Image 1 (cartoon, rainbow, N blue to C red):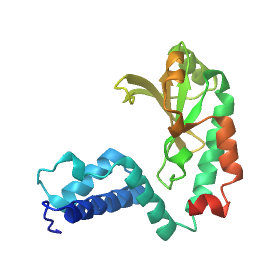
Image 2: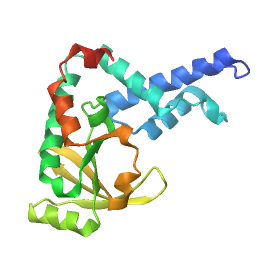
Image 3: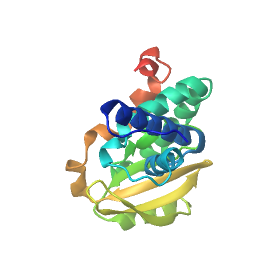
Image 4: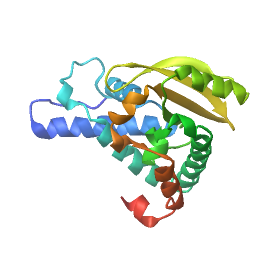
Length: 205
């Protein structure tokens, strides 16, 4: 285990980078969730030491580490995998158009890998309409809850679509005006990303 001293800025930055790098490995290699990957990295690097919150990397830093890890170890497979998931997400969004679908997560931000699922936000005044729609398509789903960014409980319908995991997080229509637009994309946004997936500019950013 690496030993770190926490009384100077350089050491804090060092351990933050170490946590982000290890968490990114867990995400890229195993499909771990960001929060779980961060906790696991802290445990592996520092054991049961108590930490100040400011020593932990934020998700933006971890996301950048994931991009760098994928570019280093999965450059020959990750772009095709990402394109495949984005194409499936686009097909689903066309089917679900009446529910105002937006793609989020790794499929949207470009870090999707072998273990990634598709996450869509839907906006409707009646969440039961989504369930009925899926049943009419012959799709068996499981119901759970995810916590939204404002702490609200979001009904989530999960199922397998063409051998890929899909999770539909159902919002009230009013949430469409208040949700952060930077972390999501509509069908037009996604189709643009699909068209530019092989662009050197996208991979260099």
